Length: 175
Image 1 (tube, one colour):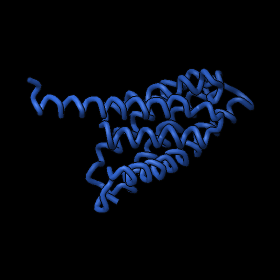
Image 2 (image 1 turned 30 degrees about the vertical axis):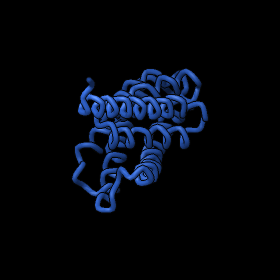
Image 3 (image 1 turned 120 degrees about the horizontal axis):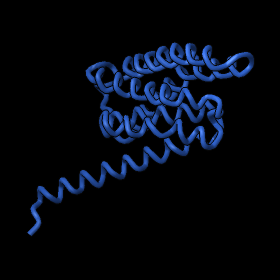
Image 4 (image 1 turned 180 degrees about the vertical axis):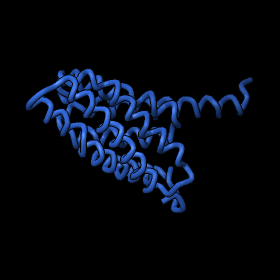
């Protein structure tokens, strides 16, 4: 006879796997829109939601794939492929800071995580871009990896809030 405890744990595992699969699907397919603001906002929203619902490990796993898919579909120009590891690291920084600030006000967590991601990616990409590129490509790359990163992280935080609040993952005292 199967114990009730086993059935409950199995239901939780299936639910977590379904949530992970849904969030990963959204994050990976967001680049098909070929719009940095929309794509970045969706990816960042999925990262914040994953961090809140699945925890740090699930969010990190989800944060590793969108850049590769963005490169494959052309949302991320092929010339910027050397920056993919840094984009992945910036996603890890985003979710890690969000998770470790768990006792902080939701909006302060979002702003702090977005700012850390932006500062890291802007600093690293500026160094790498200056080493690898010249002229127009350098300017385009620098722009893609500067203020839009902060904006899309903030917009992703707002979108995540709406989803999390709607799913009752955020209570009124966490606002």
